[in-house]
Length: 237
Image (cartoon, rainbow, N blue to C red; front, side, top):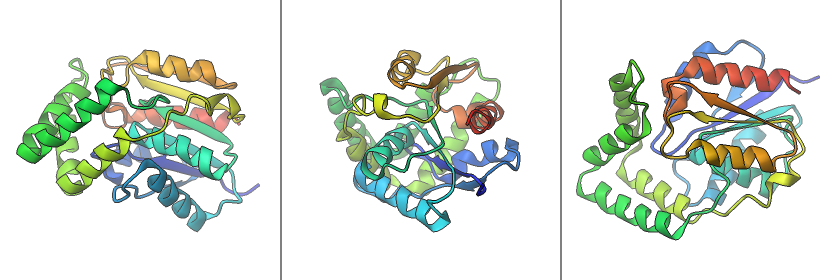
């Protein structure tokens, strides 16, 4: 059997560094691929970029797809467009729903806030996305700010527009036949636990996990726990 490929898709305002702590806690059970989806204008284009990155590593090997936040939208779009038949799927702090009317309006306000003061916007996102109970909350917020600054305002606006136009994927979930693991932080206010519960209920072979002392930024807040989930997913094939 070929060596598995673990595909880790970042979320909004993230660079590949969002996975650094997770990778440091992983064993040697799989190769890792982190697609660069930051420069793509739509979730569909992000999926295309991810598929191209996977192709460079080889699509004929067992795949574990993991999407965090926006990366979850990309993972689901990848399944819809390219039907890669992964050996496992991890959906982390994300949702299968399309944008609501209220959410679409909030995205436009977010773009306006970025254009007015990008640094302040990122700081507010960091506040809202982290668990108040996390002992290293300020450090986590600082890491998000560093990534967002590296990403840049134009890419952040493009991501916001792309997410605003994403497709609802709930119709796709019952067709996913591989084992799936759905997880989010117990203190997640961006994609709260009921959204993970909904996805787990629609996936035929899903397990649901809550991550303690974590908000939305689970790869930064609890990297060891996320690495444990990925290892569990690999072992669950």
